[in-house]
Image (cartoon, rainbow, N blue to C red; front, side):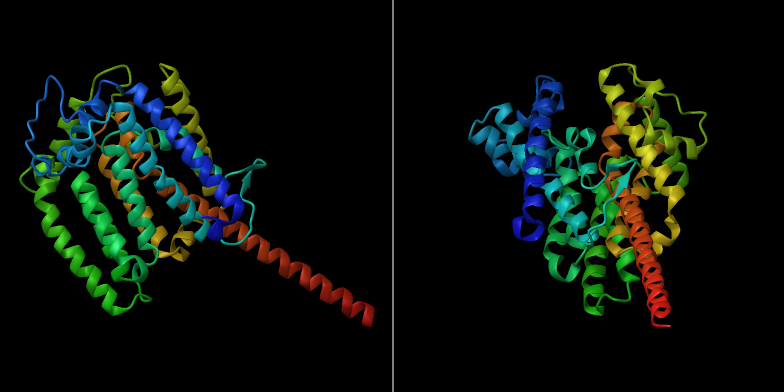
Length: 383
């Protein structure tokens, strides 16, 4: 980190690591006895799994988590809190990579401030981002693997192996997310005129193979026969009904779809808070909503999209597809926060890039204006 980002970047990376591990232990305490214990102990008293060897645990979804945990939990006999430390330590690299991605996008020293508060790299300290991506389970794994993918997609020529490996890992944890990011990336990269034809062929081959491999898994996971409007609508209604429990339930059955998407992305807000955790979430959602409105009103988001690097475009497309898909099937704030955590950071990156481009343009205009004033003064003095 030091040669790439300097002492400031190194110090911030150390802060990110400790902050993330601290969140990991808080998540471990918060979720102890639930899915985190289930994953680490390779089952619980309600769901028993008898794995005679390591590769008996191999598979997708939950089984892949068992497969990763088996040598540490079953063979070495490490306890839950050691597992929590391992997961939070490894998943902290997601934020180191996000920091490097941002430093690559925001190369010029332009202070991105709103109301006098710097938003980069402080945006990487939002509590929910760390909370849901630090514990034992699929959430931390999918967050890390997706960040690895987007880190590599910035320069496919250099990181083609990383992109392939991270795609495979995403498929093992959540096949439907692998489907989404491969679709987003293949559409953008095949249309990229700067990418060499040979790399397009390589990625197209990987994408086609991935779609064929993943399609069946996605249908199996969704428990439908084919991807059709009727099946998806029925799935949304069923899933929404299954999640209609607890104090964090929100009835969105009568909402128009845009309002469902808004609810998925920016609620709970203060009027939805029913406990301390949801109150903290509402503060964070308010900050994100304020950033979206402020930057959206100040900048031209469509122009930003057109001028964005392909990596930013792929991030945004992935975020949009995932949000549109999940918004129709969620009716529980707790589940919403977990599911949007996978992709929401990429929407924030797009907003930051838009604001950065706006400030950069303003800075250039200011320099040109000062140069013209200087020229007029020099001409006047010469006269």
